[in-house]
Length: 116
Image 1: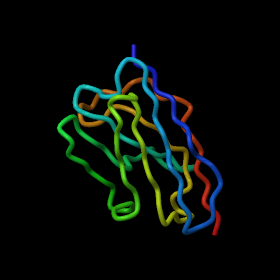
Image 2: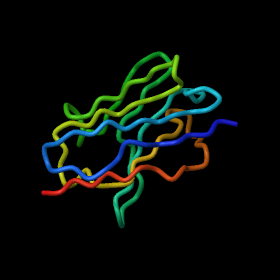
Image 3: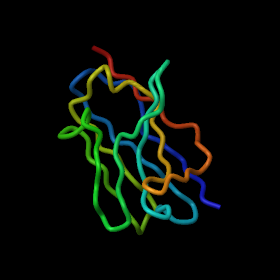
């Protein structure tokens, strides 16, 4: 069974950067791909970015041009480089399957807090 562990979150000032990591045991990619999701307090979880097995990438409009999703197959790790962070990016960030409609059990996530 695949286990996902997110890391790299923290407190950063607006305009700053963070790099999140998603480490997977048992292989990094789901049936169709992997994605980063986030859930802000009081809001529903939303897709931030997804990368398919073939390499195609999709970003939420709110993060286009600021976030970059990537993977390192050799390390079974996926990354989310977040630049020009805004207070509205504050959320718990999770990684999980993307594209198939099937999800693994959600992990603890990693908290990202952006101060203004």
